[in-house]
Length: 170
Length: 261
Image (cartoon, rainbow over all chains, first blue to last red; front, side, top):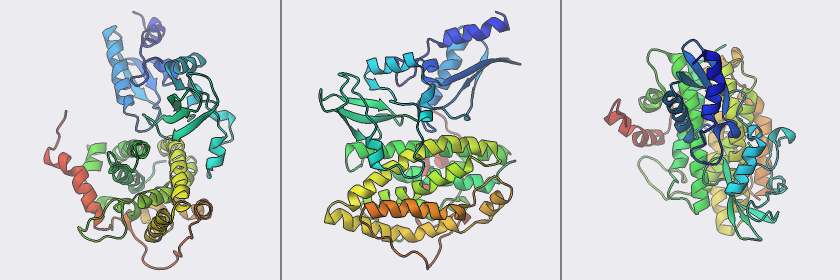
């Protein structure tokens, strides 16, 4: 295997790797997998962590190394903090997969919104309408800012009564 | 440019100690959603602490690791604000115990997250690139922490007579500890001098605005906080409570050095 084919091949191999918490979405679609490049001692795979304390990151780190090793690709995984990961990096197909899986994807791009830096007033937060991933109704309510993982909030649909996770814009 | 080691440890210890304190609610939250919320907030804080300790270990060299910094230092070596090590209850001394009080938890998280949204924002301009990168991640998380704390500040402050009274006591108990934010430690002055740190005093008027706005909506009156003792946790002079936090947090690592699983 030559070095030049390895980079594209590595992308293809890693396409099969999904997020440990949300198995329907690949690491590329989630925007965690940033770059694969040639280094002196093989390939370097660069990932950017989602939340600082996300316990899935170590798993992702190990999964990447193990999967590439299984395919005989010598690679090391390194972490890049800046620019910081944002839900804006999720691909459209990835968002659609989330919705079908029952998780409402982020409703807007963080970069499109003038961030209310210092005073996140509850009234401003309520302006955000999160459609129910099950029935599509906009009549939903936030039950909690923090859901089953740090990246999600807990919502409830007032129409179909479904309780669902919302992937918060970050 | 590199930030002074003690400055990075100050930020790391703040995150770790408050993360450890908030994690005490895990399995004991007043309602399930809050149990989960506090665990998530702790996870963010401990994640931030890890990034900072990894960097501090690099600055320190000589075989230092994030685990050694977190688990094998004594209380005098910790550089966190005293506010963050206090138990979730009103004033206590020695080994006295009291039930956990959610009002104390919320007021503390409100004070600290209001500071950190400003602090991380300012640190984006740090001449220390690694510190600026950690700030870029942390700012997103702490905005959610502030939103959470502020919501509950308003719910409980402008709630029932009982919840209002408990919020008022928590406020009166904790407000004096915030004075420590504004008095520079040698590490902070050094960091400001070499362009890697934040002049915290310059954030004070914005912090006051966030706090006053929140308290106002919560129908709480801000206690006078101008005189009296200023705590010095960030210089290693702590309350007796930090040793109890460390005893619990560090016991396993100290009993089984180098253990892996």
